Amino acid sequence: MGFGSCGQRRREPKEMEKRVPKDGFVYRVSTSGEWEELQRTGATLGGGLDRRTGCIHLSDLDQVRMVLNNFFRGREDLFLLQIDATKLGEELIYEAAEDTYFPHFYGPDRSFRPLSLDVVSKAEKLELKNAEFTCSLLNQA
Image (cartoon, rainbow, N blue to C red; front, side, top):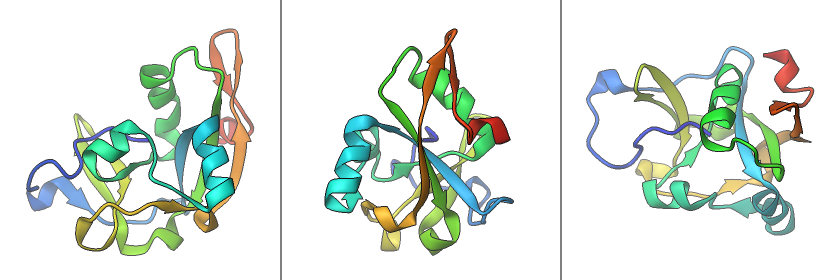
């Protein structure tokens, strides 16, 4: 889950770009409640930040540890979702946040659209060991 200011102001072209990540996947740090909702209903609108900003916050694999440490430190109810970026299509937009770009998922015309279960290719429980998050997906970073 990247944390830019999606949906909050008009962006200059240099601040947005559409691309598919090198490995073809983006990642979502998900609470157990959100993951259960996604499995039960087939879609999620994400958490409070996603709803306030109008997009689903995602991360590239090399950004996940930073997101975990900055926003989820000490939490034990987390899952890492691997999402097939090609299934998100044109609605996957990378936006500037400080000195990097984070992937954000929008609906058509940058409307707010739920993330559907069919784009999730893998989900793993994040374990907290010695104050560090771990799972096999993170070991690939």
